[in-house]
Length: 79
Image 1 (cartoon, helix red, strand yellow):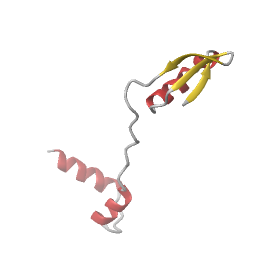
Image 2 (cartoon, one colour):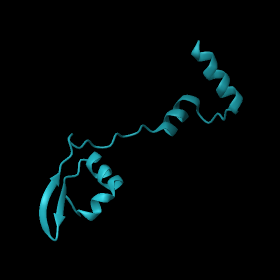
Image 3 (cartoon, helix red, strand yellow):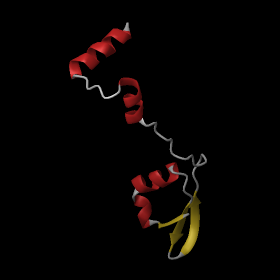
């Protein structure tokens, strides 16, 4: 749980980041709790990205492609 003061509420960017991360925020004035900011949705763990480098190596091996070849391959697959 994070604790902030009324003055710190002006930093809306930080408050939004905390709420999106699922952090409960306690608002204080002169040391007294005057309110709570609670995220609307429960916190979700960040999605794990696949290992793209390992996938590329598994598919293409150590082959190095020129930029034009990759563009041509992509355009051929579109239609």
